[in-house]
View 1: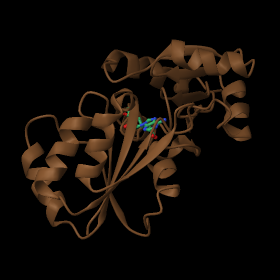
View 2: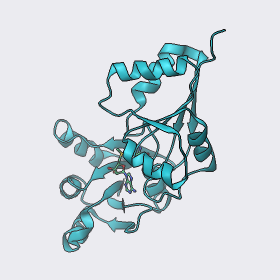
View 3: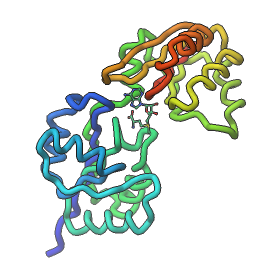
Amino acid sequence: MESEIGTLYIVATPIGNLEDITLRALRTLKEVDYVLCEDTRTTQNLLNKYDIKTKTMSYHAHSTENKENVIINLLKSGKDLALVSDAGTPTISDPGVMLVANVKKEFGTDVKVVPIPGPSALITALSASGISSAEFIFLGFLPHKKGRETLFKEISKSKRVIVFYESTHRIMKTLSSLIEHAPTFKIVIGRELTKQFEEFVEGTPEQVLTYFTVNDDKHRGEFVVIVEPK
Ligand code: SAM
């Protein structure tokens, strides 16, 4: 008799504080046959903390079609798999979208792809920003070069709250672009959320840039930028 197709769980993991993980996520990570990780070392820290002994396997942005075939064959042979990323919800500005799409393409409605919800940096930032999230646009990471200028022009005309991810390397450049294109807008930045040096910085783009210029050590880390049209 053919074995039943395994289940692919999409498991959200902490964005900093390792206590931010659900009971269901922990049980799933414990019960599956393999955990597919963006970086096995990062996920191993989490698994060690909760004494989870499940085998890990890497799956990341540069994984080949061959790796996806290995994963599809594991599901075919009835293995249950959990996909995790380094932080937050997999597939949200993170690897895994193609895997989920290809698994669904391969098995159609015969496969169960089960989300195990938990942290995501954008929702974490919005929740404590004091900015209405009834309606917002999420841009993920902004383009580095092509289309960047056009996007800032679009942001300047937006009537909706806009949220995006930013890195240490580009935060100051992005604030400068906001000063140029949207000087009156309100900015809230969530930095190092759930970590030791978590902070929220708010003001006009110029005020926020000044804050990070004066506090030179504070434009390092991970950032969620929330832009409210004013
Ligand atoms: N999938 C993740 C999620 O659900 O939030 C996002 C992954 S994306 C590759 C990483 C970006 O998310 C970082 O560059 C930063 O902009 C944001 N981010 C992740 N963790 C964060 C944290 N603890 N504080 C602030 N921003 C964070």
